[in-house]
Every structure is written in C-alpha cells, then in structure tokens.
Image (tube, rainbow, N blue to C red; front, side, top):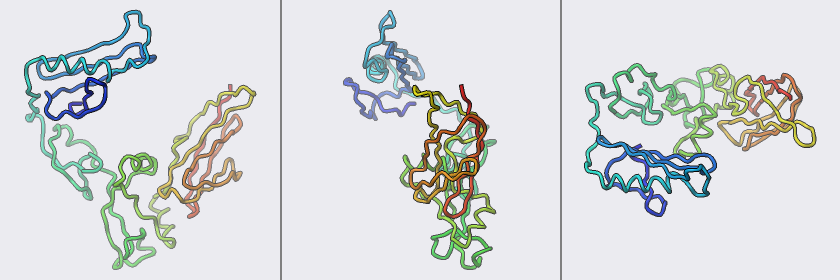
Length: 281
C-alpha cells in the first residue's frame, strides 16, 4: 500500500519517488454519495471523507480524485519522514519462488526474502514441475513413447488452465507448457494433465436462470479455458452434440429446468465432464 501511485492535484496519476512514505487506500460509495481516503505513517493516521451531509450523490465524487489529494496535502504538513522498522525478531530469510510467491520448491527460480517465521509452515510452490520433452524441446513425452536417453528435462512454471487463461493476459512472459506429442496423448491422460478447465460452471452447481420478457428462460453462458486456445473443442449436453468452438470457447445455452451434464472433448480426445442443475422460478 506504500507503493501505490499517488494522484496529483488534477486527479491524474503520477508516481512520486521522493515523497514521504505513506500507506494509503481510497474508496467510493455506490451512487457517488461519498468518497474517502485513509493513510498511515509510524506517527499519524489520517482519514478524509468527502460528500454531502444529506447523502445526495454527485457524479465524479471519486476517492482517488477528491479525497486522496487532500490526504497528501495534510501529510505534507505533518513532520516525520521515517517508516516502520521491520520486526526482524519475528522474521527469517527464506527462499521464495520468483513466479508464484510461495516458498520455493525443487524446480523454482528462487529469491531470498524476509518472511514471518510462521511462513516456514506455508505450502511449497506447487506450480513448478519438471517436464520431459523430446530432443527438440517441442513436445512433452514420456517413457511410454520416447527413449529416456533422448529426452530433454526442463523446470516449467505451469498454472491450471483457468488461472493460466487470466494470468497470460497480464503477464506476456508466461509460456504455456508444450503439448504432448500425438503418440504420447495416452501418457497425458495417465498423468491427469487435462489441458482444459471450465471457467463456468466450475463446480457441480445449481444455476438460477431468470425469465425474459417473452416468458422464455434466459441463456446461460458456459465458458472453458484451453491451454491451446486454437484447439477445437466439441460440446455435448446430455449426450447431444451442440457444436464446436475454437479460440473463444463460449456457448450461450438454454438448458431446461432440471439436472444436466456438460461434456467437452477436444480434438486430441481429452475429455471434461461437469454436472449442473438449472433452477426455475
């Protein structure tokens, strides 16, 4: 919270490296009824509220534009430029995974960081694994389809398909693991390495679908993430084929009230099933 970019007097964003260190946060109520900003230093805690006494909303009444500039004007008038001393007596230095932030595991690229002593009980990073690739490092393989002497072994940061779907949009450096070679697809199934994962519905769930003005049930958008976005996925509902998708794996469906099963099969034969129930009015 200390490293958040600060607003200038015009409400725009500008990063101040030389200002007094302040940990701060803003907020805006629904309907722009009021805005607030709060900040703390080792010596002071300052809270700013902006709004109308009768609770009437005002367009543009946003915390970062209205309350935050006042907050920093006040801190500029207050003495002191120090910061909290780290509680080293309750901290230890430990290797931390550079990508995931968990305690470093066997295959992580690690940085040494100060962490609370209780952090030594935290889980080790589960997102780095050793991949076995072919001689050209283009495909994943296993001993069932490739001679171990010809394999290349690489530590890889591997997120589940849904997490990967969102993580890649903000982290262009992320590289998906290579797919399994065609003659090694059976090995992929044996390793439970399903390359796709439902975004919605993610778990067995009940879905309430409202009725439109025409008296019919609204559509429910089902979505799946695949490690290879261009891979074709075939959709089935209760055993009935619905069609296929590539790149954007979404379908707006109108299942009837009651229990259903969604089945997804990609072009390589990987299979994903999910049960759900549609709840009517």
